[in-house]
Length: 282
Image 1 (cartoon, one colour):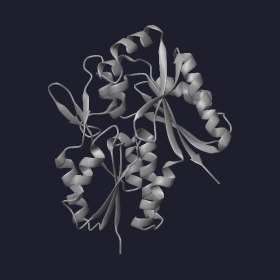
Image 2: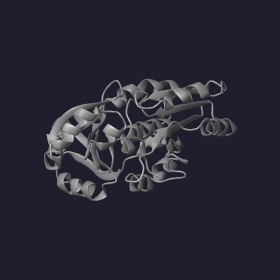
Image 3: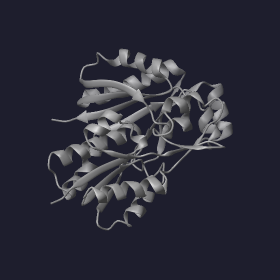
Image 4: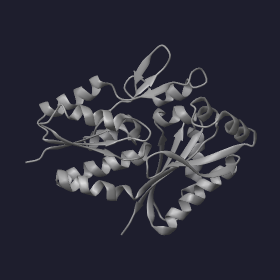
């Protein structure tokens, strides 16, 4: 009989309550400063990371080999025969590949690493879907087959408050970035099918950028009902304002807001606002 474990990483933006309710294990990414490093959500909180950005912009890195090894040792001890890792996009992090290599050291646990080609709550939703399938009695093979189809129902769109951190991180040219800042350009980004950031649209100023986010949400709601998440990176008030702005739109089945993992936020800076949709068909 199959005993299937589901695990993810700390970029998933699931709450501790959600992880505990569905028995999802998670691997902490690393938040690395010049003189110290921390395990995301274990040794440092998102609030602490965002609060310190003015002093120092940290780097992010993969979960440690020690943490990955400890996870598989724990699963082995608890008698799991199969494991499914629902991971941050391989186009943004080497986490999925690193865990896949480590899993080969535990041949007694048949492991499938699913690259969500996304991050944040879009990744988290996929982990929840996988965990719910386990509870519903689906087999390891059935869940592997279902995940790519389920992914088609999930997207997240982000509005950046500043281009400063993309410039610092080398993710945008200094010249074009400086011009964009001078013109008060606010890009709307999302993660494409290859699992990398792309610019979906651009807006002149924060007000217009928020209008574009709402417009994107409405386009989704016109097609089908959705569960909606408002995401923020150190911008709680703006997220709450966005919730108030969209809460009465027809077709929203549920609506909540939560903070984005520093895995995204350190590259985009404080003030990031996102809207995630989980389209519910049928």
